[in-house]
Every structure is written in structure tokens, then in C-alpha cells.
Amino acid sequence: MITLPRAAERRCNVCGGEEFMHGPNNRLSATRELPRCVECLALERHRQLRTVYARIPGEVLAGLEVLQMSPDVSVQPDWFARYEVSVFGGSNSLDLEAIDRPDASYDLVICNHVLEHVKHDRQGFRELLRITRPHGFVQITVPTPYTRATTREFDEPDGGAFGHWRAYGQDLVEHFSAALPGVHLVQVEAFDPVTQAGGYIYFWTLSKDTAVRLHDWMSGG
Image: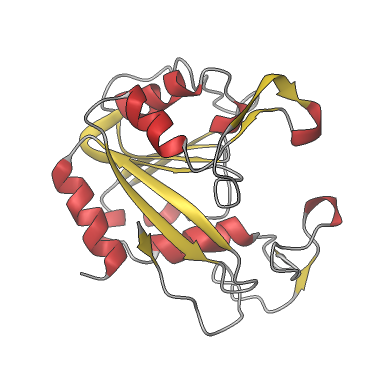
């Protein structure tokens, strides 16, 4: 795992905002700070992701054809050569367990806080890699592995947890690695510059060369 340095400046790295408010359900961050940017509404996880994407050279991002499963402010569409977004049950709705796209359609597939809503998440994981080009990569985040060691599975979607089928733990690495033998992982620990809350970002690829490049970008090599 690669751990990124903490930012010294308490500023939203999505929009530059300096005013913050409570998050969903009036919550504070894990560090007891106000998490939501007043200007752009970014939360801890969005700013953690911005920190990570800032490590990937702009000219690399500019050449990528991208699918994002569920929109958020962690990336900007104009970074990429082509950007498509799926809103489940809404615009361009795609079923993660059977994605209606040909093999090897994208260079990058972004899937933030989605897999916990998918009943058969290993099938969803395989689908994400199926539609990714051989030297492309999938970027995933999910709630809770930063604070849980072991995944807790639910018999049905938990109404108190926003319809989640599970609360992921750190064992998700083994869970998804077993779903697709030969897949490579680059795991990054990043910190929100506003609250200093930490989180894990996972990059998965079928290409060893791509994994090496991702590792080099994240580690500053």
C-alpha cells in the first residue's frame, strides 16, 4: 500500500473553498470536523480522490476514454478524451452485474461507493474489468474498509445503510482478488486536506505494466 502525504493547507482541493458544514444526516467527519464544502458540496472521499488523481499526469488523463458508474465531484469530465456517466435508475442506467457495453470499451472505469449496493459484487467486479481495455484500469472506493477489518454481509439490503448489501472490511482485497485471478492491485491511502480523515482508493488492472505505472505515479517515482 502507498500512503500519500497529508496536505498542509486546510482548503477544498475540488473548488478551493474554505467554508465547511455538516455532512449527510448532520454528521461530522471521523476526525470530528465539518466535512462538506459549502461551495461544491464535496465530502472527505471526494477530496481524497482529488489528491490521488493529482498524481496521474494530466497528459495521461487527457488521453483516456472513461466510464463513471454514478457521478460525483471527485473527477472533472473535461480531464478526459471521452467521458460517459451512468446514473442507475436514471440517465444512461447500466446494470453493474451485466454492463451493456462490449469488452474492452474504456481505458478507465470509475466506481465510487457503488459495489456495496450490488448483490453479486464479484460479478460486478468482473464486469468492470471486462469492459476495461487490457492496459486500462478500474478505480474503486467503497465505504468502511478504513475502519473495519472484516466484511459484514447482509441477507437483504440494509434500509438503515442506504440499501447496502454489505459493510466492506479490509478483507475486500482478498475477496475481489479471488474473483478474477491475475488481476493486479495498487492500493492508496489518502487523506482529506480539510478534515485529515483517511481513506483507501483501489486501482485494479489486468496489466502488470499499468500496475507499475500507477505505483510509480502514486509513490512519486
